[in-house]
Length: 242
Image (cartoon, rainbow, N blue to C red; front, side):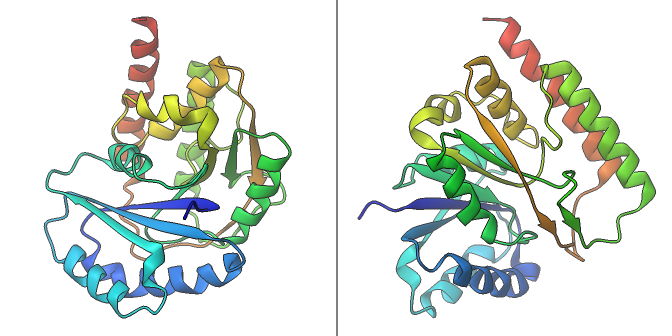
């Protein structure tokens, strides 16, 4: 049966955090119970027992038919995981969210309304005035994040308030070609998508979000900002080669 939408959740070596994250996911699924959806876990070269443990958890769930697991051996990055997951969806609307489930799924219902109004993509933004940040974010993180956003918009010629928030939705009929042509394999893949959408004249809508912190977050901000900026310039380089 064709689904209302698909949610792709990429993950790498999640065994230690899986109990907590899976409980958060099940809790959030209540807010979208009116929809016919599918959840696609893409395990990006896990070397621990994530896959075995996840299969056991899903097997114990009465509603286990909504879940799919895709797994491969080599760690290729979050962008590659989304790219692979997009090949297996059975719907016309694709969402992706980080494995730690830091956002409320009420965003999905709002996004579906925006799709009905003509949006090709809906982006959760942590920086809109209506957004709520429940984290104890340090000043250095805020400064580096805003500096990174400034450079991202400058290099790509965009004007988003948040390019890299880990919760986004796409109308797949209009963006499928972009997903299939992704060059960026790791952090900045979603920036590449939005950049290509802008060039094609597609419409992306930003929505406010409530952000909750993951106490076991594995983001190392300064190092990851540097890596992201390298990928950012690669996106422009790929485009200039055409």
